[in-house]
Length: 204
Image (cartoon, rainbow, N blue to C red; front, side):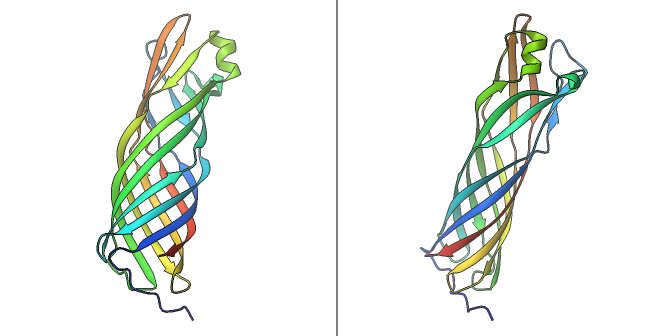
């Protein structure tokens, strides 16, 4: 039998640690001006995070998320598919979510949230195939600020400890730039990943 969970009250903190799968749901424009029938795709990545949730009331809380960067490979599509991977980059998302907890006293405690994500793209590294085809090339990717949508559930295992399952959808719109001897190319991408999380937590 599960222990009876204590009610979440105003002033309570939840601390969780989660393992995450980041699955981009990208929609790419063409790489312009030279490749109008092209695009890019972005692979999945695993990472981890720690988050802190503070209850303003029994039902309203705010979650701040501290994540570890994910590494993604970006590949060419269409006329650029022959390149395979174009660039590798690290993505670091800073996130916050205002949440509604309808059943803070239950053993199964679902929640819904909406907030923001600020995603920084770091350490862009051009691939060998890109450099061999186009010569010296510098790739950069703009940072992004967008909306975050969240749904999850905490499942009590003791009075204070719980298991957590969490799903987020992040709106991430960015522009990538490639500068080589032929000039500047750009591509607009809506990355919009789903972030699947599972972890454990405690109430304080």
